[in-house]
Length: 135
Image 1 (cartoon, one colour):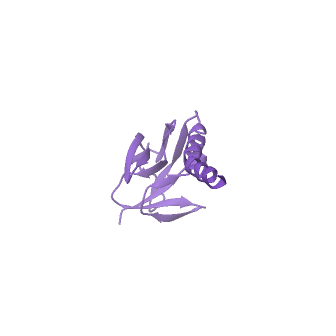
Image 2 (image 1 turned 90 degrees about the vertical axis):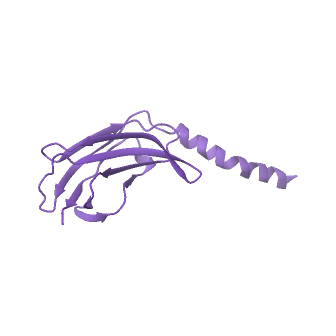
Image 3 (image 1 turned 180 degrees about the vertical axis):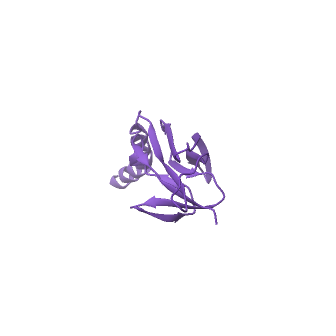
């Protein structure tokens, strides 16, 4: 008898975790701001940057939102979006076909994929600085 109760509990556990996570989505926007510079630390104007989210069904990501903007003359950008319930992952990335480095702890490190926004940071103001290397 106890074995059946334990098995029922284990089967219900993933659904309970998913419901609890979905109830914790903030109603305030996630704000991604930052600056994009070149290899000489000069600001880059007009660089497209993308903030987007998706949920996963099977092996396929299904978009839940996307927001795009371009950097201004100072190389700065600001994206803001309320992450919809059911979003499994949020990412931010400049849309360029060049080498990209992200500012981490005061220095730039090579980035090969979009930067993942941790779920505990949804609804907060975040700063992501990038450096674009032309050659």
